[in-house]
Length: 133
Image (cartoon, rainbow, N blue to C red):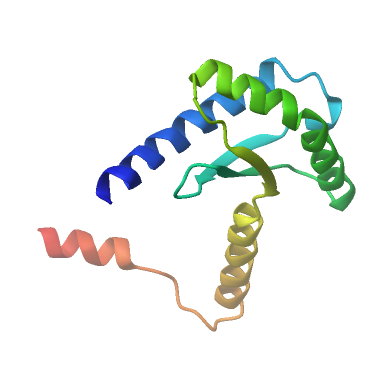
């Protein structure tokens, strides 16, 4: 079981790099300009891959990126199989990665709580330095 996980993790990283390269140098769809591939998740049997992408913009911009990926999917799947020399190329599902927006939202919440005096400043870095001395 451990080998499967390690192999999938390695394949996910390679797939992300190949898809990012294709997206930025081979796909000429203006709807995908400025879109970044952030994470690839392979199913255990490697037949499906969920590709998470980041895009800056409003809901319309996200819709355009979704449409661009729908159009580019066959090309990207074919090139992924060719470049990586995969015997079985997984189906590709593209999803927006919302983790950056969530992290930004949480930063704003913590800042507001700090500004309102609900949270005190975080001095954990200072405490850890004192413990090491």
